[in-house]
Image (cartoon, rainbow, N blue to C red; front, top):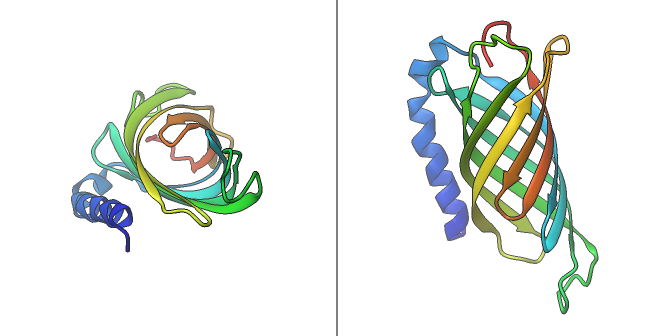
Length: 166
């Protein structure tokens, strides 16, 4: 395992033991997402993961995804070809409305993303996120998320709805 992958694995191991006390309050929320990243290497990825509560206001999201990347750099090995790509994220999100008092709610946070494309070494990026959870649609809560880290990223997220918690 490369140093950057080891760093992401170490962060995950540090977070997981802290989860147990907060689980009494808010449930773990699975999510699926579609992310598009605009950078030198453009990416489109389908991902999944879960948000683990760390108290009333903070959720730790552990996410992974895969898809396609296109490298348009001059002299790149790919020369604009489509490449396989993968991403892993660990992000702490601060919920503005954790008790589900309004139909929509903002959140923001940060963490780390590990991005890798076919034929290249992976990299870890510091990531900042901001998003808006929209009104529940049955058992699903759609959200729109913006992130900065390894490029500007726009995500469409579907999370499991819970009646009392975000």
